[in-house]
Amino acid sequence: MSVFRDQDNLHAYLSGFLWILRLTGVSAVIALVLGVLLAAMRVSPIPVLRGFGAAWVNVFRNTPLTLIIFFCYFALYATLGVTLSDDLDLNNYWLGVVGLSAYTAAFVCETIRSGINTVPAGQAEAARAIGLTFAQTLRIVVLPQAGRAVIAPLGSILIALCKNSTIVGTIGLLESSNQMKQLINDNGNAVIAIFIVFAGTFAAVLIPTGYLFGWLANRLAVKR
Amino acid sequence: MSGVLYDYPGPRARRRNAILTVVFGLAVAGLLWWVYRKFDEKGQLAGILWKPFTESATWTDFILPGLRQTLLAAATGMVLSLAFGLVFSAGRLSEHWWIRVPSGVVVEFFRAVPLLLMIFFIFYGVPFLTHRPMPAFWSVVIGLTLYNGSVLAEAFRAGIRAVPVGQSEAAYAIGLRKNQLMRHILIPQAARSMLPVIVSQLVVLLKDTALGYIVALPELLQQGVNVLSANKGNVVAAAIVVAAIYILINSALTWFAGWLDRWTQRRGLRPARAAGVPRPGPAAVLEPQG
Image 1 (tube, rainbow over the protein chains, first blue to last red):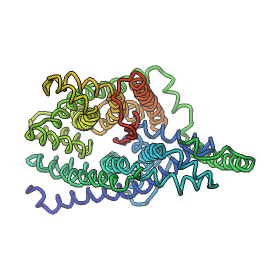
Image 2 (spheres, rainbow over the protein chains, first blue to last red):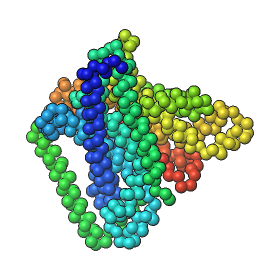
Image 3 (spheres, each protein chain N blue to C red):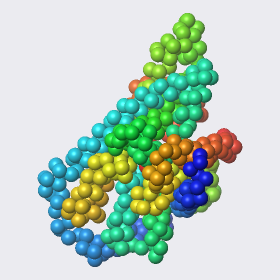
């Protein structure tokens, strides 16, 4: 591990994971909000909304994330001139957030929708019987129960999002996978140590996160 | 479920729905118009950028060889992942802790490490150890195998565990050994119910081959978008066409997985489920790996 005694190398390691953290945090919030909205659209009484939600899911779920991030950079930014920040790094960062959120929202939408399907029909019928509107039924009765049923899959999505955020490296952001590649190329004698530190960091954070979500899912499950 | 979420629309609801339809329709149309204007402004709609896709050379020189490489990497990765998954799921179900624990560690580790990090290590790091270059194809395929194999190992384990315990008890009662129980009773039942999962994992695998673009594997994204647009200068058009190809293939696979799911159920090939236990989502790919 002597490679990481070097200040520059340590800094490369830390700054790489800082980008991952920032990408994951911001994209997770946007994807969750967008995903719930899309799920609401997909079960709404209005065909245009349903169609929009379905189209979003089919397009983004079936396209490789690498292509989406590529598109964000080369099409959105380089060709169409959409600039999200004057700073080059921050601009790449926000383009990455756009791609990751759009992609992950499709999965959140499908997960929430499968959660809605686990709520017994009687719940929605009772809500309608006491005169709640569609929005109220969804917001007060159905979504809270659906959300609690899909905590474990939402956890898997968060974990996958964290791993996927390395793909933003494609457009030049120096996140952890790019930093690792750089370190490997500069320190050919310590390849294994470098890999173990980078991969180990992901494993040390993400494996417990998986168990945490499993535990939460059990704790918060709706008892029927 | 979605049908019971709202009442049959009365006159007011119909009016409200109509208004919302118009408002949202206009918003979407506005967005599309903005995109159209933007494209037009930057000259992205010019015929010259789209014309290459009507020429056969574009397809035979760039897109189809790329597609071939993508499918080859996905197919090789799938076969190896299945083998990896079988070995490690059996390992995790072993009665000997010295097999069970290491298998568990391997599976958990490879599921938690980003695929790109694996591919970078294999492509850039391993040559330092072996003193010979690592082909991009094998770095992608090995990376895909380690990740998807671990995911499949977990899926197989869950599938074998889902076979009702009475099956094992009955097998032991008629004097089968553990190994016979696995081969004759558990794996055949689990395998049929795992078919849809295997097909939908293929979608994940196919999408992940696009990571090969980063290590210059001549797959669909590399050939169809990067190389093609370097020749014709039509990156936006090329990205849209290639995305459409991915979407077509993956939708077909997803549909097939769903069909298999219904088929195995209809044919009663799936072990009966205890009442009240929800089915683990159908074939839909719920884990958004690359």
